[in-house]
Length: 229
Image 1: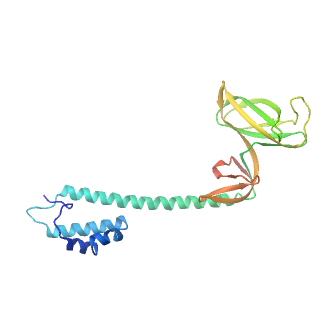
Image 2 (image 1 turned 45 degrees about the horizontal axis):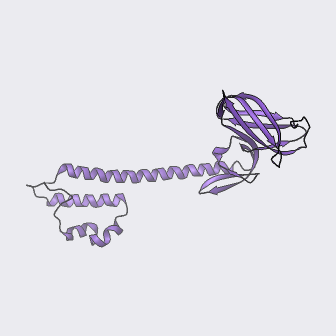
Image 3 (image 1 turned 120 degrees about the vertical axis):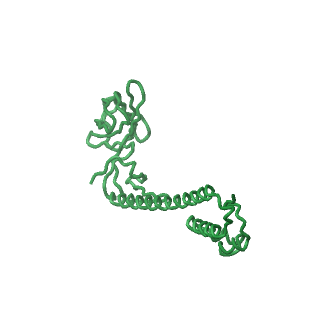
């Protein structure tokens, strides 16, 4: 049996189907799966009209080629649909990011502000922990105080520093840095220090919205733990 792949059409017939010389115009004219499918159907129709009744086309080969064309067309439509969905999601994220301007958010940060002898802090545990340690340092990196606080379940955990160093002396109000660590039954647990920031603007990096914080750093919406009015 003959197949579509080895059909005995002369170059003139192929040129008529393709709209010109197959060598010079084929690459320029075939620009989408839909056009490829249309030309395939034209070729198939022409072959069916001209086939030899004693040597008909191989139906299995024809079915296979039609299936391949349909797959290509389906993938092109799927890609177009996914692009529309991604564009819509990006637009929603951008609107959400803009609505946060002027609000206070909680995000990763190691600053701890001491005022009137009190410095409340927050951290986030990735898993339950039975031991949490906090190291507080001054602007020169000097260790002022190490504290062990009670652990807790996964999630946010609050603590407070009374503004005293390891010798019990009260230090001046101001900004200090904090480093947190945690463990559970001796195994390390990821702990992240959190800090409050004001959102001053929204920037776009590679098309993705980034919150510009009062510290100057940029974070994505997914990096924000809490948003307050």
